[in-house]
Structure formats: C-alpha cells, structure tokens
Image (cartoon, rainbow, N blue to C red; front, side, top):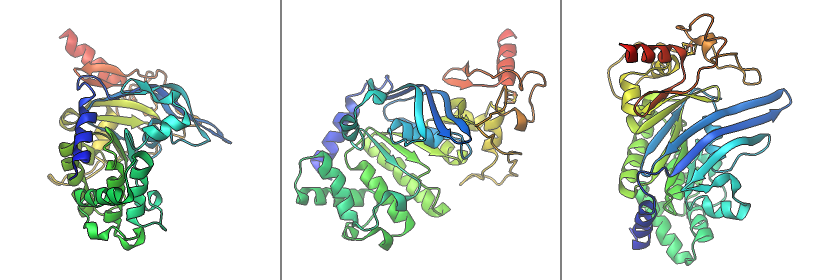
Amino acid sequence: MSSIFTTQSIQKTRSHALDRPLLEVRNLEVEYWTRRGTVRAVDDVSFDIYPNEVVGLAGESGCGKSTIAHAITRLLKPPAYIVGGEIKFAGQDILEMEEDELRGFRWEHVAIVLQSAMNSLNPVLSIREQITDVIRTHRQVSKKEATERARELLQVVGIDPNRINSYPHQLSGGMRQRVVIAIALALNPELIIMDEPTTALDVVVQKQIIQEIQSLRERFGFSILFITHDLSLLVEFSDRIGIMYAGKIVEIAPAAEIFAAPKHPYTERLMNSFPTISGPRQTLMGIPGSPPDLVSPPSGCRFHPRCPVKIEGVCEQISPQLLAIGPNRMAACHLVAEEVADEQQN
Ligand code: SF4
C-alpha cells in the first residue's frame, strides 16, 4: 500500500471531530414532478452520520432511500427536484455548491456505489482506464503512478492486480462490484454511499463482499450510508439503522436495539420478511398489501392501510411525528408513543 494512500486516509478521518456529524441531513424534501402529479418521494427526512459510522437505510422499493442517496451526491435528474431541507457535509452545504465545486466534492469526499456494477462501469474501457481516470481527474499524478495505485486498489478489494487490463464483461458480477468499490476507495473519501451494492449478487458472493467492506472500513476508517431493502443484512453490518416507509423515516435506532426489539409495527414486519444469512430458521411473516402510491398517499399514518395494530379513529386521521422513545432512538407511531407515555407514568 502506498504511503500517499494511507496518509491521506488518516488525515481526512482525523480532520473531523468524532463527536460531530460528518453528514447532516435536515428536513430533506424531494419531489418527482410527473404527468400523474407530484410525488413527494422524500418527506421531511432528517438524520446524521458520524465519522467512522455505518448508518443503514432500509425499506421496500420506492420508499425514497435511493432518492436520498442521489440527493446527497446531487445526482438527481429531472423530474426529481430537491424542494426543501439542508444537506451538510463537514459543515459545508452541499445544496449550495456550484457544479465545479461538486465535481471536486464527489469521489474526493463522498463516493457512491450503485446496485448494478454494469451500469456504473463503462463497457468499452478497461478496468485500468476506469480507475486511473478517477485518480488523474482529481490528483496530479503520472499515468504510471495512477496505474500503480489502481493495482493496489484491486488488491485491496480482493482482485488479482494482473486483471487490471480486463474489460467489465470479462469479470464475474462479484468482481465487477468489487471494481466499483475499488473506484469508490480511490481517493480515500470520508463517506461511501452504497445503494443496494450486493442485491444483484448471489448470497455467497454477497456475504464475501459485505465482509470485505467491513474490513476495509476498519482499515481505512470511512463512514458508510448503506441502503438496502434487506433489513437482516443491515442489522449485521450497521451501527444505526433508519427505517423508511413511503418517503418518511418511521424509526431510527442503534442496529442492536432494532434487532432485539423493533418498536414500529412496520419495522417489526420488515425484520420478519427476510431470512437471516446466519441464525435459526423461522417462519417469515411478510407484510400484507403494497406500499402506497405517493401521488395520493394515505391520510394520517401512511402505514395504516397495512398496519395490523392500528388504532381505529386515530391512525387514519393523524400523522404520527417522529418522537424520541429512548436514548438515541426515535419512532413515528401513535401506539409506540402511547406505550412510552404509559411506561413513563408507571
Ligand atoms: Fe400502525 Fe398507527 Fe403506528 Fe401507523 S401510527 S404504525 S397505523 S399503530
């Protein structure tokens, strides 16, 4: 490993106080302006990510989690528009950045790994060209130095550096995804956003890649925003987890607490919708019905048409607020709020 690589990684990580958020998302609102009407895909979402922390976002397809990933990196394209809120990285407002500032910011400070490596990689360029392009766009290094660095990165993600002149179609799906992770690591960013990075892979390769991501984080100390519909995967991997439903965060808590005692009825069912990679066999509960059409979301709690424990006369009328229900834990549910209030009285 080159000294440039390790030294810069440490400097970046140390330049942020560990007790202050690296990323602050406040009251974020994103809309898709479609012919059918306005879809509020992300509705008043707030969360932080601290240095060296893994925060997971989970929820069914269309709940807004990928839209958040694209909003943070300012990669949203029309008809998607950020219509409200703030996104700050190390105190700097990402939403205020000009295009040239953004180009310097992406990859250097925040990198993104998307679900389909085939869509992220250019099929007509070799792996060497794709990794060195990112390095040489941001750093004044020779082709030889960039290639040396690309070989190191391949080694780091478990690919034989002699494959450096391969083209994407010559690699397996798992190797292609590792290449995308190598590109994300190229400039030692402080935050890597991973949007369903293993969903297209089989379970064995998925587990290998997750283990590799874990060891890379321990080694280089970056933070991760990990997005998936598979909550059981997140529980094994994240420090904290936010659960999203229909554009809103409905519960956010340390992963161990979500695993031991999910509070929100949606979290509970989502937990039970996937078999764990390791752990005992159990009957899966599933979630009846489908997520709502966000052109006209349900009144009150958006989960009420699917919620088996809803409070009649309340849940379909009043939207629950995200409230603190314990140290470092929040949920948006009338039932949970009542339970917490009862516990406090007793
Ligand atoms: Fe269910 Fe009501 Fe809680 Fe919504 S607020 S999750 S409908 S109990």
